[in-house]
Length: 145
Image (cartoon, rainbow, N blue to C red; front, side, top):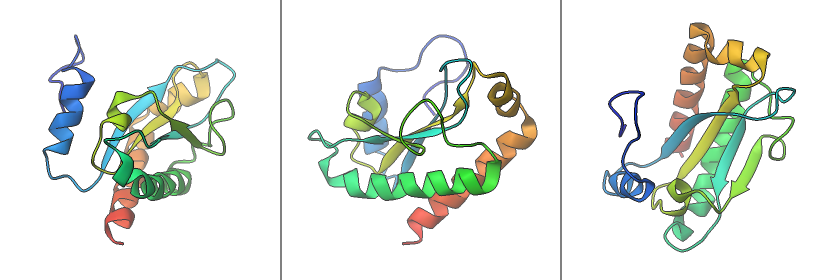
């Protein structure tokens, strides 16, 4: 966690990547909510594409992404995105946090903030607990291999 409040911005993405890389973490996830079209629903797991620094964690990041996708489906009731990615997965080569990582990592767009149904879920304490349980389940599954 690199921010102490919801105001302003945290350190630059290259600094955040270095913090993670220096942490001895075995896996990492960025948790976001998307701002897609109002008609669009669902979550997407963003996965890195090999581009140098992250080359040796691509396969493990893909495995972790599958764990996250399965756990979010199993625990939350949030559907996979109907406007972004393919069956809940999107490969990205333009996100510094994924490009610069040396730790298996994905980014979760946990729902669409612009969609009223998703927004109601995202702000619900019950859904937030379910999502936390899903991510714990995915991390434990990944680390248990």
